[in-house]
Length: 109
Length: 112
Image (cartoon, rainbow over all chains, first blue to last red; front, side):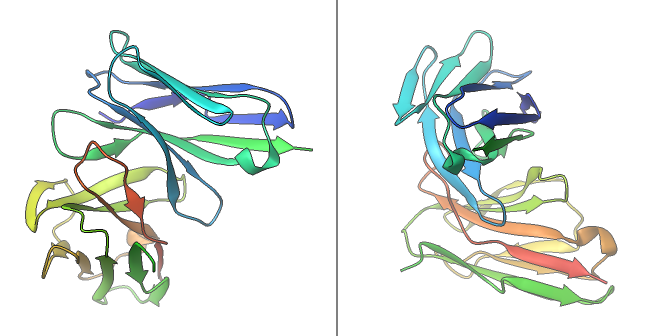
């Protein structure tokens, strides 16, 4: 039931781009994205509520393909501050937010 | 003002003990959660409370029990602690499940 993220880990140089994918075996009603820095709590990035929706947050954007039961997070021109673990989250047909398996992102100078 | 606050931040205890973790939110949210994050960083939902009513009770051991004295508080009680309970526990809240969730700072529980 837990969404699966890929890749598990990404290593980047500053300025490089990355894509993180989130796939579900069940229908997705919405997709959340969060970032957790080491030793800190997860912090909300964005929510996509409709299939086909795309959203942007500075150089971080996401898309939601409802039919494929997938979402992708795009990080453009990565910065050191982007390092952390990224989680997608979804609400199935119940009132609970379930998180994906996580993707660890490290950005080096 | 901290939106979601948890206490304590660190908790070290012996096997077999009973402990509690407190959580308070001042956002006026109707939904509160408890998550467990293990050493592999997976965030697993344990409980979800909506307006003081337990709406989803995950298959966690019944040694764990959530208690909500009012809408702003959701405490976690753990009886007969085991080594495998060692993890970071996060409290979170949201207006409804489909909206942004705010997390507490986490409680690192170590059972020795």
